[in-house]
Amino acid sequence: MSLKLTPIQRETLMALITLQRKKGEAIRGEDIATFIKRNPGTIRNQMQTMKALGLVDGVPGPKGGYRARIKAYEALGIDLLPEEAIIKVRVNNKLIEEVNVEEVSFTTVRHPNICKAEIQILGNIEIFKIGDKITVGPTPVNKLLVSGVIEGKDAVSNKILIDAEYIETLPKHPTKDFMTEFVVVEGNVTIKDVALKMKNEKLYAVSVLEEGELRIVSIKEVFAAILDGRSDDKVGSISNKAININADDPLYRSITKIIEDPNAIAALVNKNDRKVGIVNKIVIVDRLTDHIIELLGNSVD
Image (tube, rainbow, N blue to C red; front, side, top):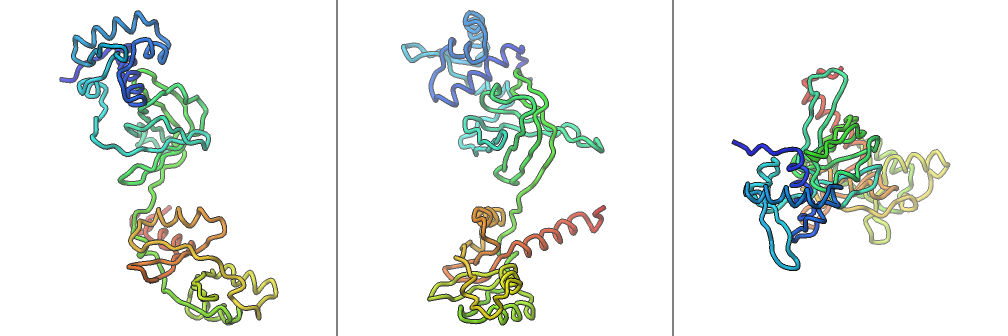
């Protein structure tokens, strides 16, 4: 049977674990009292009780204080892992580096119009304010992202309640599943000839060999140049420095690499030190859409 803690015991233990994770050393009772805005005498009394319960150890000496035992983590429902991933938390688009996430749970999954989520925080919950925009994730295995507005806080369990506006899972499929044929054209070929080739072969992007360098150009840039009256210009003049990504990398990592460059629309795909394909934003969206429709059994409303 799990140990039932009083609200003040839960709050004190959570503060101890938060400070211990941050400082990596024993924590003085005065520091815990300051952290949770309690009287130091109250904290000392609580610590004596929790020592008797086997939840904390007292550490003597000038650098002494208290350390949480494994039993404390178990009492709070926190997994003590030998190695843990850092789940990023952003508040109002700012990364909060001093916290991590223990658990994400959805509390209204059967409600037709509302989606609420509880986020258990490892760290100081006081930095979160009602009304803040928050994004949590991606989680390490399923790459889950949850974004919404903070509606409430529970200092005892160190949880925040959010109105979940967006729940996304970043695509883990290998990049090679989304690449198209690797096609190279010489940089001195005219833009209109490249446009015709792209149309006939249904290509969204091609690699351009320009002065010994493999560059890249997308269909968007080709037709923008034609509309600008540059049909007879060389395609090398509108080509861009190529982003290179790995064929076996998960798609979300490749997408991140592409969107980090505001001018990038496509990228070259490498496998075993050779070019094997091209990925393009248009193809990615099309194929992800097909995948979602397949998962939903062609029943998208």
